[in-house]
Image (cartoon, rainbow, N blue to C red; front, top):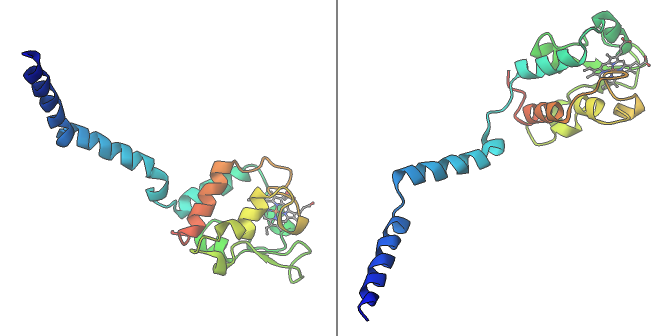
Length: 158
Ligand code: HEM
């Protein structure tokens, strides 16, 4: 009988910290929540990151040969404007079919994976069976493809 109040006291003492967590615990919980939401809330990639990925993919390739192969003498991404203007013409300049690398109607609306740039890099048969790019590889890693998709979906920030 004497031990009963002791037990009650103990449970009350335990209940207190549960009702009001210490600032340290609150901070830790917030940090965990933030970490979990990192992917959704991370800052969108910007053009220099995309430029670096594309440059790495074609390291050692001749720019002149790439421009000829794609039927677009402006094929490249030295600037964002240049990349935006690329239209690939596999059969040569002025011929059809033609494929804009990044169709503006697919930018900023969750459709980045449908752009020819992404299809060319990610799909094993490429755009309209022109082959996966860069020709003969090495091909882009999944994480790089996702970065490009995220960038297009974010509106292609400079
Ligand atoms: C609409 C998108 C694209 C299409 C339809 C396309 C199509 C082609 C075609 C038809 C060739 C020539 C293949 C041959 O000679 O047998 C080629 C070559 C090549 N493409 Fe693409 N391509 C596209 C995008 C890209 C992109 C985004 C890259 C790089 C990031 C790339 C990198 C290359 C390279 C490195 C070559 C080899 C050039 C050489 O002869 O040295 N292509 N592409």
